[in-house]
Length: 77
Image (cartoon, rainbow, N blue to C red; front, side):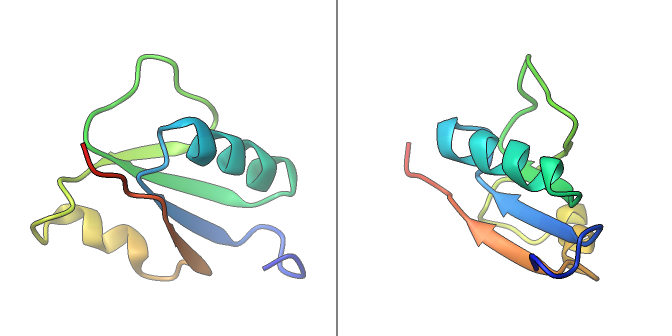
């Protein structure tokens, strides 16, 4: 991925501290970032946010197509 700037990375559960830090890093490196989250955060960065529930297949699955990588940071709450 580091050799392929401009690629898309999907971060599941990426709206927390670790996910937002990783999203900023990847965006600064030239990647497009899509964050899968349970609800849209109030403070959004340059990433694209897609709502999902982590239990059911839905429209969110389309963002996985063509992604260079998927990072799972889903927590339990």
